[in-house]
Image 1 (cartoon, rainbow, N blue to C red):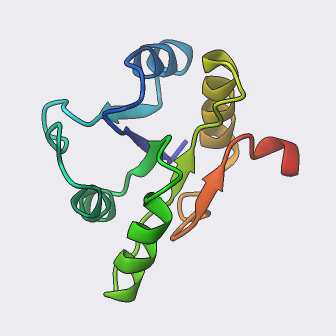
Image 2 (cartoon, rainbow, N blue to C red):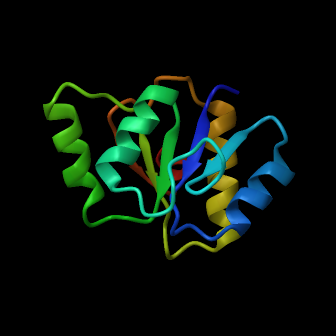
Length: 123
């Protein structure tokens, strides 16, 4: 398993708890955790942090995140990827999807991409 997740501050804390509980090898940090971006950090700065530390951003921000990603790439940046949770799925189903992706994916498979969950149904 090579993927690492940074959960944005608007993701319910239960995601981190359950992801860690269901797969102890998965590295999951949340905005506001020690050594992660502080609560209130602007999205462009979170993308820069994810690039530097190699974390995929897990978010529910469908509106502005695509714009921030394009801006980030246009200035020469790259990120490991962005996973957008599906509000039509239960928390459990979103968590299962994140675990599945972490277990079957290659490290740079989602570079500079936004992946809308559920992704496994498309494979």
